[in-house]
Structures are given as C-alpha cells and as structure tokens.
Length: 186
Length: 186
Ligand SMILES: [Ca+2]
Image (cartoon, rainbow over all chains, first blue to last red; front, top):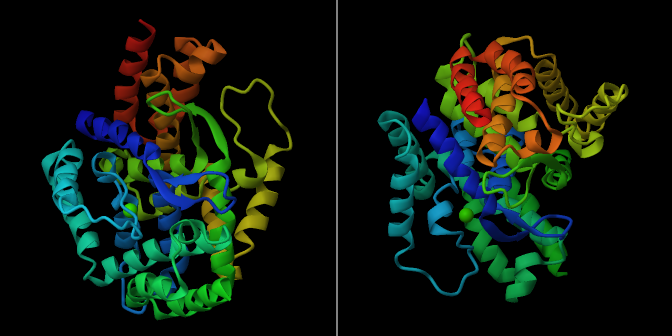
C-alpha cells in the first residue's frame, strides 16, 4: 500500500500542468487533472454515442490516466507548429517512471492501458480520443474562439484537425460538432 | 444529445469551486473538479483495500459525481464550526437542478447514485467516503498541517473526525493513516 499511496501523492502534480484550453468562463486555462475529470464525465454521460461497442468502464479509466505522463512530458496541443520528435520517447519514459511507482502488475496494466489510448486503434481508445478532441472544441466555441482565435485557425483547419478523430469514435458527436463549428465561423 | 452536452458545459463550473484543502505543493487550494479526479484515481488504485466487496466501477462513478452539487451549494469542510441546517436541502435542490439538465432516466440514475454516496451505507458508498476522507488527510500531512494547522485541530480530534469514516471502508487504510497522523503530531 505504501507504493500506491506514493503514486497517489505523485500524481497530485497533474493539477499544475496547464493546458492551452480555457475554462468555459474564460477566467483561466484548464489544468490536466480537472480536464481528466471532465473527460471521464463526458464518457459517463455520452457512452451511448459511441458508434462501436465499447466497455465504458475501460474508457473511463483510460481517460482518468491519459494525461498523467504530462507530469514529466508536458502538454502538447494539436495546434503547436513545432513538433517535438522526442515527444513520444519522453512520454514513454514518463509512463515508466510514474506508473513504475506502483506495484509491478498494477503499474504494468496502467502502462498498457495508456499505450492503448495513445495508439487510438481499439474501440475503447477511439471513443476516448473522440471525447478528448470534442471537449476543447466546445470550450473554444464557448470562449469566442479560444485557442483557435489565438492561433488564427480557420474553419477548414478545425474540420481537418478535429473531424477525423471525433468521427472515428462517434459520427453523432461529430455531426453536432460540425454544426457548432459552422455557426461559430459564420 | 443536446441536453447531455448542456450538462457537460454546466459542470465545467465545478473547476471554480475551491476547497479548503491545499495541493501537496502548498501553492494553492484544490478545486472540486481536480479533487474528484484525484479520488477516482484513489479508487482505481486502492480498490483492493476495501474491507467489503465492492463494485469498483460504481465507486469510481460515485466519486466522479459526488461533489457536483457544490456548483450550487458550495463546499462544506468537516472542520467548519457552524453547521448550516439547510445544507442538505440546498444540496438536494442542486442535485435536482444540475442532474435535471440530463434526459430524465440518466439524470435520475445519477441523483440516486449521489444519494447513495451521501447516505454512506452501501459497501460502495462506505469505500467512496473513506477515500474522500483519506485524501485530504494526506494533503494536510504533506503541507505541515494544512487545514488542521489553520483550525488548531488536535491529534485526537483528527482521529475522531477521520477514523470512523476511513475505517468503515478500509481498516487497512486507517491503519496507515493513524500512523501518519501520530508521526505528524509527534
Ligand atoms: Ca493532452
């Protein structure tokens, strides 16, 4: 139990990883811990919107842990112009260090779950990724453009960067999102 | 889906409900959204520590939603000297308003789950409540006393206010906590 409590102390640091996305009230930027809570709630509420059959409890777990590597590797939003080639290596190192605090089999299971999310191939991962893309879209729209306005992103760029990921988990969600985006840029 | 998305926008406000508990780095107070994420992680990691048989997926859901009523009713820490008699009524009203944004059956299920947590009687609720009491204890100890120092709380008061709730879900966790508390006040 000592290792488990040490892990739970360590991940408190995710509350200080600041994302680019604003809160809906536009008062401050979101941190990755509260973002992870919000996404787990997205999964719980929108589970019926997945196109494929999913195990919603696995999706919730995936979303709870999906950003923990950011404690070491930072948050890298999709509109960043410079790609860090080492980002993947950094994140794997982070996963090994942080989940490695846990007892071996528990830590190993969470590393596997995180890699499944990153790969985005399984039904559960595809739906988790579609929610992870949907939530900032809503926040950007609610804050008069949010990170899109900051980065001068156009409607077609939004459709290109959000559409494939959202629709690969839920065509219903992307149907809603596409209309919101259209109205936003109109 | 519109009602569900409206609910997910509404609960963004939980990120602005500030608790008394400090983050472990003592840089700022915790908000109730990131706290809910942290507790869901406590459940995921510590599920084997429950004394009773539990459905860990229900415990995680319970903890994800347990503080949402605070959007309307505020956070009420256990060391507050004044008890608000209307607090329970306020929270029920809050649950009805906020979960009421959802489609009827989905909202009704979450209100029931929240009431089960509040009652703290079922195995799942007892374990959820023990984690909700354990986490701030750890944060107080990691920050040289945190809210205990602010309120001049003694060792025996800590044992009285944390012990029954933590041990009713997990005697193992309380065993660990009791030693931490003893060392803290030594
Ligand atoms: Ca991220």
